[in-house]
Image 1 (cartoon, rainbow, N blue to C red):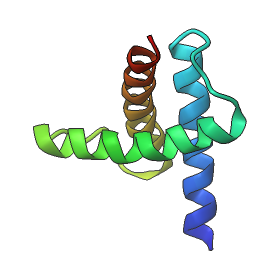
Image 2 (cartoon, rainbow, N blue to C red):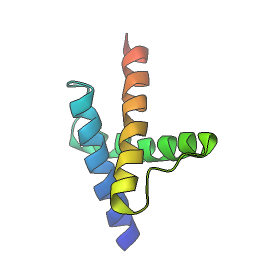
Image 3 (tube, helix red, strand yellow):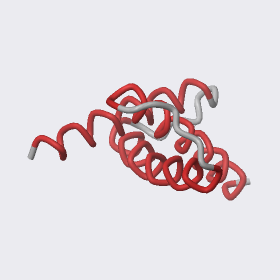
Image 4 (cartoon, helix red, strand yellow):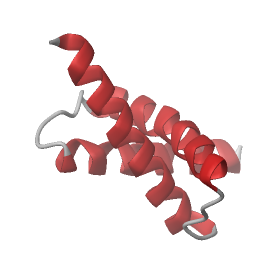
Length: 81
């Protein structure tokens, strides 16, 4: 149960940050959490491909998820156009 809560917190923060960075491309609170969680998977996958590590713990997870969420929001904005 604790890891689920941590995942939701990281996803929410990452989705919110990605929405701010992408200048209003956020999708609302619930969807930002979803984007952040999916972004965490995307970011983790991309970083593992290049052999990069942004750090351990909550901060590293938020950075990884935020970068992945930014990429996901960029893809969504291109699909919407």
